[in-house]
Amino acid sequence: MACDEEVLPLQERIESVADKADLEEVYNTERHLLYVACTRARDELLVTGVEPGSEFLQDMNGAGTLP
Image (cartoon, rainbow, N blue to C red):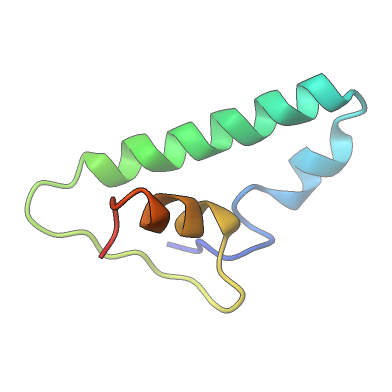
């Protein structure tokens, strides 16, 4: 739920990072957590949010993970 742009990754977390390397780590961690959560679904997966959706959803769709 709430896979929209300002929620995933959480905007406050992004703004609190000062170092570029730390920022990349935050993005990678958030992306990985979403991927793991989505791949745990056995029969069906419902992803919700409002426009604009999280950029992570586009990443997963490009990888063939989402229909």
